[in-house]
Image (tube, rainbow, N blue to C red; front, side, top):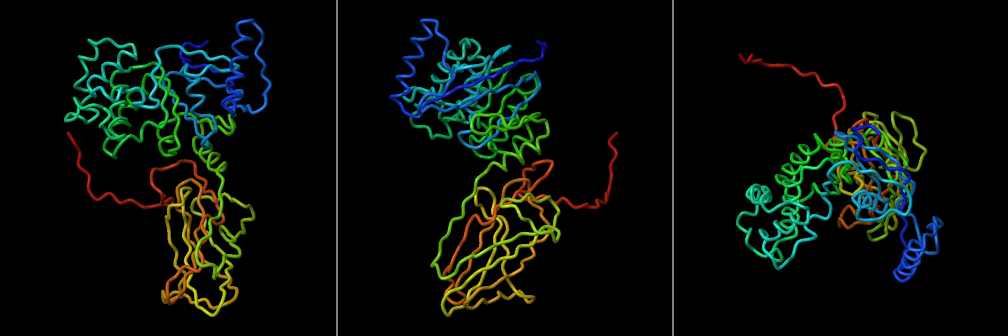
Length: 408
């Protein structure tokens, strides 16, 4: 085995049972078979499912493998299996070097003890001496930003303070060869998050890292390789981070939510990019393409309606609102019956990701919502790289240098 390969995983699988009583019965049978030396069955028994199934990969020193996938895809189960918290049912794992894990931060703290006392107890669990903690406890307290509360029982801490203390203990005291991270970077306000990011970057220089996150900009910034998981299996393992992120967004499911008085309805929405109709249910659109939406709506009764169309991200957060107006900027009034409108949306300057539309029609006089359809016609934006911003200006911009100073 190559010297710099610190993690080697071959055919690792783990199954769980959906029912507690059945799980206990299966567990007792597995223990009996193991004591008697009988081979463990790899067939799924009733109510069992594969949490992870046939996973293979290697991670070398200086590499960061990102694990992405929807909730329940098996990411955290795999991480706990690598960390030795869960025994796999099949396969082989080789770990070379000291392991550090930033998983479930603060979960082991004793609530009736003070933060200072918990630091020493947590460090002893990690196998660290009291002398080492004495040397770095001031650094831990300063990093967690809890100087005024260090001798307060942890049970009076907020959840954010508890997680910050857990991160500080692990991040300052551990200098591992292998580092496991599970959604640990969103542990406070923006200043503390930046501090965490910088500390993790320092650790990554000399470690092999496995990083689980739903934050795609973080995945793009940290990872040298990404593995996409779905229903316990690896569906993609690539060094092309943009390809992996686009595949991840392609696995997302979307459903339309409807509200309002019901006096109007959205009948259809079609998209075209650069004048070409997009026929797929969830089409992929390239950045910079000109996007046009053709919307059909119906308004009931004798009333006038005004329509707006909004582009929302995968969390249904509104990003861009397009009022339906005439050439003078006046909202177009739509009477009873069916209407078909062609709405230019302009060039696609969205970050790579999954998006959809929110279409709303309201009464022109009372402003009451006649209908609001949320999650309409999802689409994906493809890009080679995921940026931190929601919008990305991809066109060519000419930069003029105004002044240059030479440092001697």
